[in-house]
Structures are given as structure tokens and as C-alpha cells.
Image (cartoon, rainbow, N blue to C red):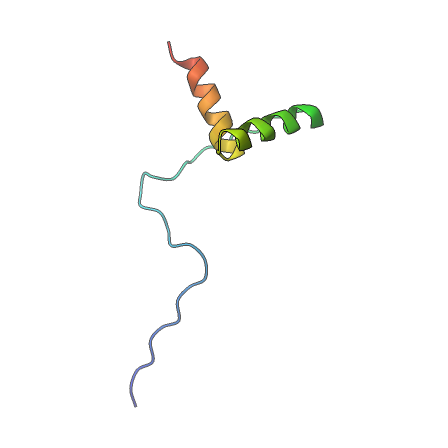
Amino acid sequence: MPKQPKPKKPGRPPLPKGSTKGEMLRIRVTADELRTIEAAAKASRQTRSEFIRGKLLAITEV
């Protein structure tokens, strides 16, 4: 009897070591602020996280 191949696991394959983001920063914003952030992120063709991360890193560069 031939062996059957193992079924593939659902979901995305794991990322290589060191390429994942390990920490989470949570903030609270008003509904108006969230709409503004989402609109700006969409206009720059970025996710909300990419947009916010880029802005924070830009102001922390000395």
C-alpha cells in the first residue's frame, strides 16, 4: 500500500527567524483621529500599521 502525502497545514508558512515583529504598541485614539489616520494611510498606499510605524520612526530620528 503506497504512503499518502501528509496534508498541508492551513495558513501562511512561518516567517524566517528574525523577520517577525515581536512587540506590540497599543494606543487609544478618537473616532475622528482613526478616520484621519486610515485616510492618510490609504492615500499613501500603506497599511495603518506601516503608516503609523513610518511616522513614529521619522520623528524619532535625530
